Length: 148
Image (cartoon, rainbow, N blue to C red; front, top):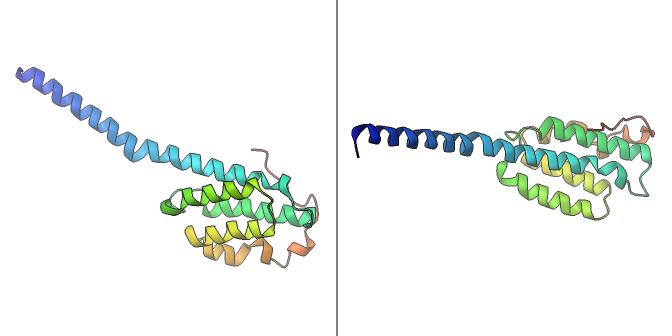
């Protein structure tokens, strides 16, 4: 192989190596993280339609909206949620959504965020809806669910 051919081959290897590193280190993890976030948010957004019969509408809305806030404040960034735990959480969350849900499901979500996300424990201590004294005053329509 000529010197020029070897030089060209080295450049091809360098360019492909850089492209592969860019994919492995930046693009693929971000796509993976976006997929996780979108699936978790979709699961939380499915909760309004799954209100248990024994929970008043206003109280269920209160719990679901605060859980949406939890996700936005403690789970949206991949750097806030333990990578080791995120997919385990999503699998169990989606399984739980297949059956009946209740206030214990909301508490389970909050427990998981408290255990596995940066800031989750302090957020849970301050805002967990199932422990809020305001829960009993929540009325239907007090909270608006975002469409997207």
